[in-house]
Length: 598
Image (cartoon, rainbow, N blue to C red; front, side, top):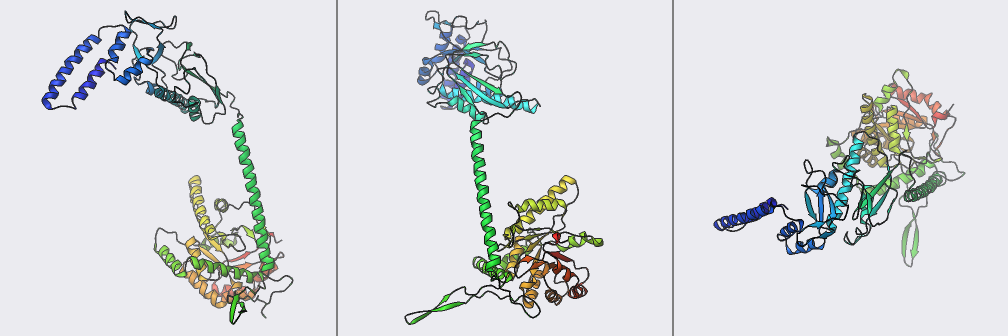
């Protein structure tokens, strides 16, 4: 520190201690002493005399540290416009301010020092500074140097210059810059390089007696003052290699990582395919074997409708143990058709859901959601369909589902959100999402994801095209048997629901349509026969928003490939009566592989 800095430092210490009078006297005496010392310091002295003058004002520890090895640094190119802090200069990419030299010999009589022969020409009036070797400062110096390098690289990139990618780095430290200097940590400098160049595939180098090169000439741009090539006895040289052609370079480590990732992805895909195949087999077996006896025709009523029974809960057999007779529950009954087995599995699923969330709690949640203005409200599902079908236009409503019970999975990777976004951008007026988990592999979460994905896609498309894009409303397609399911779908974000009329009697059909109306959910009735159309015809006008003529066989859940089932329903008197009672504007939809019927 200079004499001015020492004077200011002592003034600060004195102003914080002592009483008012004693403090003033001590301060005056100290100022006089420092003024005398400063006057002496202004007189040119030999370097050793300056070092002794500075050392007397240091603590015992600092004096011992200074005596270990005293180095002298000569300023490069003057100090005007330079950042005085050495680390800050390096972090800014300005390079070192001083070139540090080792003292070859010292004259004890005259206090002079001698540099190695031919190492430097000292000019008259050059500023010098005493340096000592410190491991902690060396660490900060290396990090500051690389910080300046990265700032230089970033500034060139922002200026639009063509910066080639780094392909390698070599580190050449001198022998005195090993683990002892850096606190016993081996490979410190190469570790710093890997931190600042995380993508470099190769870092190598070796220790040397000295390094040749310019002093940070590549960091500060055009150096101020002399910066010729020179031999550095205690320094580190970093050589950064770049690809001039910008070709991708080979990294053995990255190649191993990529190979491991590819093997893991392949194994995951294989496991997913096996899981998907097992799921397909399970659902196919469930629909063909468990949901109906092989080679046995399902019972039907005189009007041709399937006779379906609800699940037997209290079936079992008696078991006598000594004098006590027990009733052991057994699943003795077997479904006679795919629809009946589907209904039994769905009833079991709903019972399990009721155990977790009772109906009363679910109803209160629905009521709170309907009263909360921040919660999404059901949208008009059939309105966009009518608008799209105006003037006799043909309308297609896409349906999203993971699998079919008779054929298995429809695709290997079912990304519902991606599909919904594509359908939204394609201009689908409305969409249908199958949320059944028994046969079709869906879930209640699919309804929520479809609603969120359509809203996000509509917002993005509106910004890109500057045209208002409306998110298509969502129809929840499921086998609905209880009001409990309607409350669940309302909370999931459904706008409309699909009722399979063949699985309901007149009383349940009336009850479910009323509950759906209370929840502001539109109803699409799916029918497979004229008898079912007559059941809908008994409901009041406005009970259903649309009727869907299904081409599916409820006995085995297969499709009528000829399309005669749907065509006969379109030509039936029951449908004409329905249009007369419910209005000709109620849309009539057809579903079930109708796109492949010639």
